[in-house]
Length: 126
Image 1 (tube, rainbow, N blue to C red):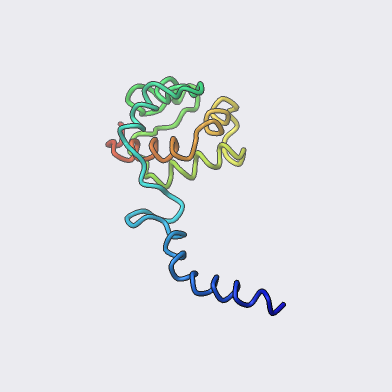
Image 2: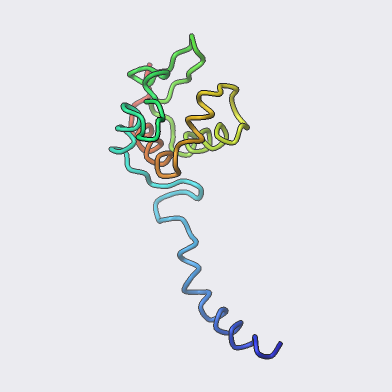
């Protein structure tokens, strides 16, 4: 046991320098990421290379939603709301639409953050 003491001491001494890396970037809330709105706009309009459909297909070109198929408004949603919804949909905890579940599951964390940044930058659609 005494042979582990130097390693434990070293780990404890390094802890204060490693702790800031575990914090979210400044200017973002825990559980959200800044995101790249320009890349998010591209995903919303064109989808992704791995087959994710453009958001506009179901949610409309103005992202005001499509009540006829149950697609909600996306324009103007806060980033945290979009990120939480995509995570819940991907995990099967929200919504019953298997198409949206597959889309949310196929999006990477960066894709989700970028989409959320773009949607938050838009004015709320009427």
